[in-house]
Each structure stands twice: as structure tokens, then as C-alpha cells.
Image (spheres, helix red, strand yellow):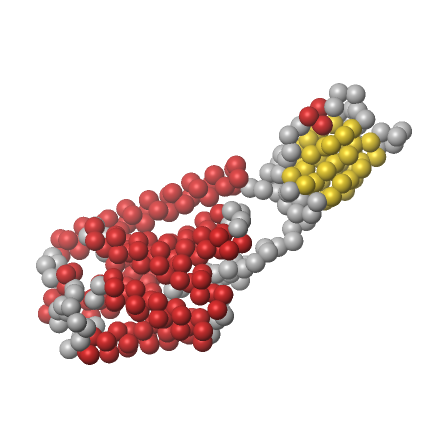
Length: 165
Length: 145
């Protein structure tokens, strides 16, 4: 299917919103100072929305552009590897779980949040060639579950309520 | 899900055919899924806590007195002298501690496998030496993700 100009514009808008969410999140103080890396994952609200209203290809495009752009603007190029690994694994899991049609956006988003952390940790293990980060994943997986619930509820609300004319 | 609120988009199979019963079922599945996930994480976390925790240093005690504390992250050789020319050579290599040589008669401490996990210890009874893995000299994480 040839993408229409309207669709391209809408996805561009979604990407912009995701980038703004990432920017807002970078301004927030760390939720738990002792354990860095815990984030709310606001941009994932947009990814969940795009995944449900458009599809996994569109969600992957938005996620990819968002991560690269945000890393270049606010982060450093090294973080791209971590974020891409997290984003890829997260979207893969969410797409497969959504296909089973067993869970709502909340359950799907929780899996996405946990897998996002898993991807980052795996990439960190790969880059630093150490397996000693397992305990860190446990903490991040629990907080990822909590933020996944929040993101899933917001995303589900957006999926139901946002009108696209 | 109120279908009238949504203008269906071409690639949105989920926008159609949602019934309230399906939403309830999904919500119940969500709770089961999240509970199961947290339970699995709790079990893995417990496993880490009980079996997998690596200590960061070893504490050497001689006759109940603290002799010294050495980080496991730095390779070192420590000669534990207990007087009368008696010597136990403690070696820390690759994050593990072991006794390389000793002047004690039985040499059980030398035969002990290298230790690195929290609470593990090597004991030399003749010289009253206890080497225990602790969490004392923590140099913090190498990198923050």
C-alpha cells in the first residue's frame, strides 16, 4: 500500500510528540537517584498508540526516527546503541503479544517496558562483555513493569479517544 | 470500546469488532500476566539474593581480630603472618580469593576452592585464620546505563 500524504504527516506528528515526550522526560529529576536508568517511558505512549492505530511497521519507523533524533539532540551517539536495542526488542515483543489478542494495551505495554530494559541491559553486556548486570535487570524489570502499566493506560486511552479525520 | 469515537484507519484491525466482554477478558488477562511477571521476577531476584551474589572484598581475621580487608576487583598477594614465622599466602586473582601456600600442617586452606560469593569462607584452624567474602570495599559501578 502506497502511504498517503496524510499518513506521512500523521506519523511525522507522532514522531514529533514522541520527541517532545522524551525531552520532557529528560528534564524530570531521576525518580530513584540510587538506581539510574529508571524512566517513565513517556515516548512509548506514542509508540503504543501508533502500533494499535497504524501497525508495527509504522511504529518501528516512528520509534527509530525518534531514538536517533533524540540521541543526537539531547544524548550522545553512544546511547543510540542502547536505545535502539531496547526499542527493537520492546516493539518486537509488543507486536507479537498484540497479535495473540489476549491482552489489552496495558499488558502489551508492560511487556514492552520490561523488554525495553532487557534490550538495554543485553546491549550493555555486549558492549562491556560482562554478565554481571543481571541483578540490575531485576530492578529495572520491576520498575519497567510499573511504568509499563502507566504507559499502557495512557496509550490505551489515546487509542480509544484520539480522533483522526 | 466506543467505536463511534474512532474513524477507522486502514491498517487498524483492532479498531473493529471490540466487545465489552472481550475488554473484560483482556483486563483479567492483563492482571494475570502482570502478576505472573512480577512473581517470576521475585523468584529470580530471590535466586540472585540467595545464590548468585558476588562479594566485593574479603575480610581476613586472625584469632577473632580483623587482620585486613582486600578488594576482590584488584589482583593482590597478601602474606598473612601470624607470628613464629608462620605464613599463609592469600592470593586474589580474577575476582576470586584462594590460599596459595601455607605453613600449617594440614593444608586444608590451600586445598579449598577459590571463593568469591557473599559469605563464603576459607578457614585455617591451626593458624586461627578466617577469610570471609564480604561487601565492604565497594568501588561502585563501573558504568551507569
